[in-house]
Image 1 (cartoon, rainbow, N blue to C red):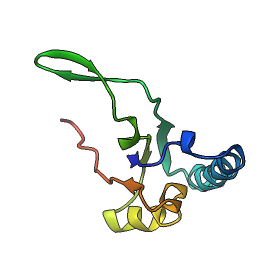
Image 2 (image 1 turned 135 degrees about the horizontal axis):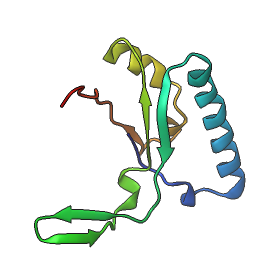
Image 3 (image 1 turned 135 degrees about the vertical axis):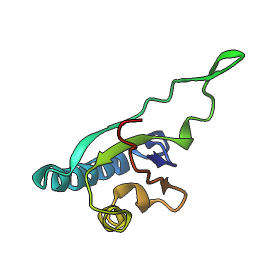
Image 4 (image 1 turned 90 degrees about the horizontal axis):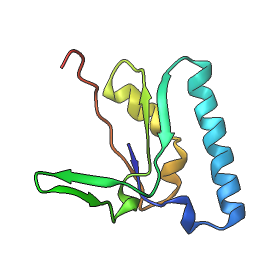
Length: 102
C-alpha cells in the first residue's frame, strides 16, 4: 500500500514523468509474472465505524496498492527499492502478507 504525495501536488510535466516511471516499473513485474493486482485509489472515500459512514478527509494517507508475488519480505523490499513512490521523501510503502484461507 502506497501513501504520501498525491499527483495533484505535481506540475503537469512532473505528473507525466512520474507516471512514465510507474509504467516502466510495473512493466518489470508484468514481464516476471509477479504483479497480481494493483491500482491507484481515488481521493473520495468513506470510513465505516459502528456509528455509520463518514467522508474520508485525509486522502493523502493511501494513494494506491499492489499485490506482488514474492518469496519473502526481503525479496519484496528489494523489488520496492526502485518504486517511483519513494522518489518523494514524505511517501511510504506498507508491506503486508496476504493471509490465505482466513
